[in-house]
Length: 252
Image 1 (cartoon, rainbow, N blue to C red):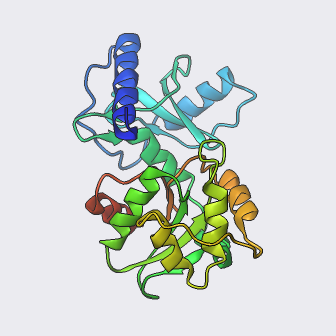
Image 2 (cartoon, rainbow, N blue to C red):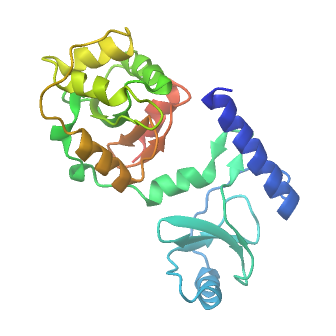
């Protein structure tokens, strides 16, 4: 089973669990919250009373779920009723539009500051005035290779590639990452390894790979590819298409 099939299986499992537990049959009609929430402050008080040791942040109506509220708890979110006594902890999924609504919301509230990225540790490519995109990549990751093909076909991007080998599943990834970083033309070396399957001479220079691994952990990026937009949003995994990628990059 490939990654796409695995994702679909996970979403179906989540959807089935939600339906069986809560009676939520369909979530295709998704509406965005706009305007004031007259009851949110009371809901927050109710939730805080039930969970006194938890720091409760923003509370707002849950999209497409009448009578339910989205509760922000640090860097995570949950869903609760008005009384704050029942909670859904998991992801809300819209199968009709193939959207993970919870993941989108988390990406919005947990965005990072672009200026905090150590760009000196990245391989830079694309026009200087292009849309900014940071990519955490593993030279042996098949989906990273697909992403490189997609990026090659998408002009107008200023790409900062952080080499992030996942040695636990790709034992040779670190050696390949070192050889790429130590090459005279790093971007050319990256493409030759990932798209052409070439083997480069071993890298013998100092590399930022350990720093990149620590950075990924700090940002909550646990797999590859991991993407960061110029607006600071994080996307986990391969975008479904160039159109999806560009739409995501254009979001403020």
